[in-house]
Length: 249
Image (cartoon, rainbow, N blue to C red; front, side, top):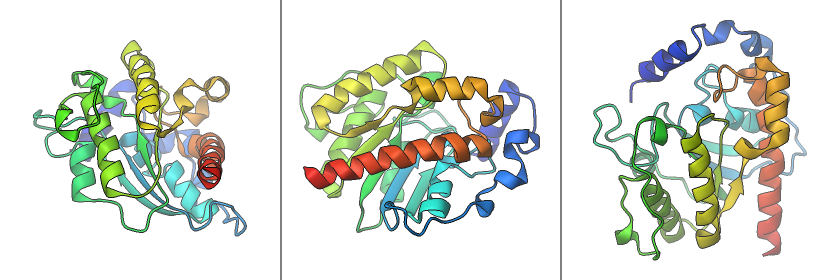
């Protein structure tokens, strides 16, 4: 996937240079935040898999992942590529770059504490079939060219290959197709037992975004300020909850 595609899309959605927005001012850059040496997340090894929002495509490639590294001292592996889908696809600009394909090409380094996967906002927009939730956990039963099949295959793959918890996070995205996908993810959570960071349904996040337009570039992509002041504290709290839950299991 060429980076220019997401840049062109962002230009169409909001024809402004992202870095000229107030929320992307240099003062909000990752290099200007301060490390908390006492962060309870310090030293946690986390693999982040996603697309433009995980990448930070509208924030000079600085996302919540990079702020967590700089502020909390986590060890992060950020496997993120703009415009990509969860499901495999034969579309020319998507082929070879799905979440599943990139996970295979750039797998997590061991040892590992957590895998965090973005619930893609691109599958519906790129007309990837939603698919069906299977009645089995057999990997051979999952259609990797559908979004739900790809999600289930990913769950099975993590269970089989990495002895660590799995979490999915949802994004801020308008449109009925993404809300349907979030609802399906909640059904899959009951089946597979992963954690869910449901930022996209959080009323406080939605309200804060509406009150502070400088937090966002468009309806889905945060600015540096949005990542720093809204998304990173949210993820910090959610990640701590996940690790505390794992400790008492």
